[in-house]
Every structure is written in structure tokens, then in C-alpha cells.
Length: 269
Ligand SMILES: Nc1ncnc2c1ncn2[C@@H]1O[C@H](COP(=O)(O)OP(=O)(O)OP(=O)(O)O)[C@@H](O)[C@H]1O
Image 1 (cartoon, helix red, strand yellow):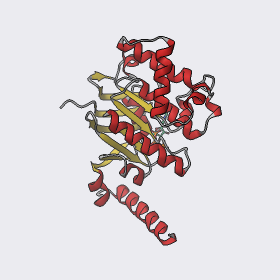
Image 2 (cartoon, helix red, strand yellow):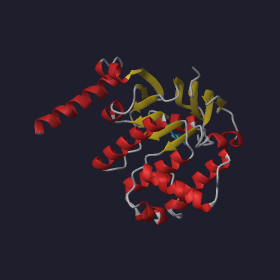
Image 3 (cartoon, protein in one colour):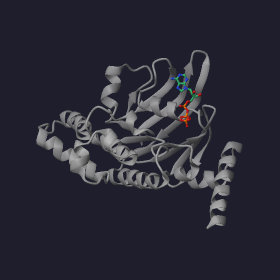
């Protein structure tokens, strides 16, 4: 089967400094893959590269095939049609995706309108509004009428992340990239957003590239995991295998830390 995302021998550099090297992995349609690693290990750069959003100052070499399209060396004209449709991203901080100066309904509506235009569907105001309200409902936002008319600063951080997820879904992407989507949220909201993402990925049969530094969160979300350190993959495998029998010292240290945390929680229970 052809992979939805197929990265081969990817290297990312700034000047003579190597940021990511020897990176190869693929994601099949509907598959959920986790990318885990310490801060600065290259997770976000990998995610940005996978959707053709690497900063211009960085140089990429190797191959990134997204839905059959080569991203390395592609120009904006080739990349723009793929963003949102082949893959969409949910970032750690929802305000990365949301414009603080536009109401939520308008922003999600703009994404819906682009998709409708692409698919030859109705783009009149009533149709777009109906679909935006339905999307806000699907991401379990309360009081969708109020949220539709709200500015981003008038809703909570968790609600902003739900709105950003609605925007990502508006284009019906085949691959959803979630880059630490819950890190900026409190623990209860984190759990709710994770449950929401898992439900949406399952219901819509999307592939998921889920990035996190939090091992238990990754373990509960994906089927297969890649562990990155210093810009390279140091371990890969099925979640259950990697976490039950970690081979690389860095993965072993992650597992030990997660177990110690669990034990500490049990002692206080
Ligand atoms: N635009 C850039 N120019 C130069 N170096 C960069 C740029 N963006 C990221 N880097 C560097 O590349 C390395 C990998 O960064 P990246 O953001 O991918 O890490 P990460 O694993 O996602 O970390 P975190 O978990 O903290 O988000 C880091 O050393 C970072 O400083």
C-alpha cells in the first residue's frame, strides 16, 4: 500500500549546523504514529517539513512524499493546495492558527469556504454558516452560536484549541499533525482535548502524526512510536513493545521516569 506520508533520508540544516539527520519513516492512511523526544530533538521541524512549512532559512534534503507529492524543493504554488487537504496541523498554542483579530466563525468559515470551493460545493453564506456551526458542534464546543461570534480572546484556552481543531478539520485532511496539542492546557482540559482528537481521528479515518514529550500521553494515543534524540530517530516500534522493552538508553530513561511518576501517584492515592 502506498504511504500517505513517506519521509526518506530527510536532513534539515541551518548553515553548517545539522538539526535533523537520517530521518526515514512513513505513515499509512488511517495509521496513528507518535513522535516523542526531548525538547530540541527535532520533532516540530519534522512536523513542519511534513507539511511544507519549514522556515526559509533552513535547508532540507532527502525526500518527503505527502499523498504522492514531493515536498522537498517544491515551491509555494505546489505546496499551498496540499496544506489542509492532504495534511493539516494543530499546534501547541491555538493562537498560532487563529487570527486574534477575526471572530471564530469567520476564521473557521474561511477554511470551510476554501474546501467547498475546491470540492465544487455551495459557498453561499447560509451553507458556510451551517457547516461552521456543525464543525463547532463536532469539536464539542458549548453554545456554538456565541462561540461563532466570539473573538479568540473571549473564549478559554481549551475552547480556542477546539476551534483550531475545527479549522484543521474543515479541509477534511487525510493526515492530521498534532504538535504538542495539549501542552499549553491544564490537566483536565488536556484529557478532554486528547479524547476529542482520538475520537475525531477514529470517526474520520484520518492518519495521525502525534508529537509529544509526554510518554504516557503518546502511549494512550497512537499505535506506533518513533523516539527522537538530537535530531535522529533512536528507536521505533509498536507502542506496547517500545514501552515494555525499550532498547535505547534514552527511551529507557523515559520509561523509568514515567514509571517513577506512576509509583509516586500510587503512593499518594
Ligand atoms: N528557524 C530555526 N532556525 C534555526 N534553528 C532552529 C529553527 N527552528 C528550530 N531550530 C532548532 O532546531 C532544533 C530542533 O527544534 P524543534 O523545534 O524541532 O525541537 P522540538 O523537538 O520540537 O522541541 P520542543 O519539544 O521544545 O518543541 C533545536 O535545536 C532548535 O533550536
